[in-house]
Length: 212
Image (cartoon, rainbow, N blue to C red):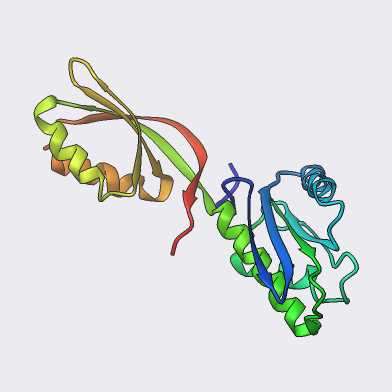
């Protein structure tokens, strides 16, 4: 299984206006260059009447493919600044398009760099940067008298409770990062005096929220 990497949770967009020009930042997760180009095409078709549709995309967990375009803006004022934002955030397998509707007021090179950088930032924030981390599913079996204690403790543990079933005992399916598995199981063992049982199930890549 590949290592951890940052990408986007979902496709999303946001916008702002500067000196009467409207900038709309779009971002989407893309696993392949074909997906990135298809996303770019969809935005271009949606905004055929826009002055510019500048873009930057990075494909591959090791950023093996990196492409960007100023789409008619002065060289180095749009695509490259957007790429620098993506690289600074460490995000891969993503495509960002910043659409501009010219408002009649020239922004100058510095103003364009700031505007397209901001368009990329708000697009990434809207799409939510997540870290794809190696994670394990644990199937917990907890006696009823201990469940409240376990349930309360898990709110402060680095786990995600996916499902809970109440039968002869409480059965919970939780997700934990591989790097946290030992600490979490030790905590649950101590908390329940080893009366809770668990099985390790699948290992998956899961999108955890980006660390602050």
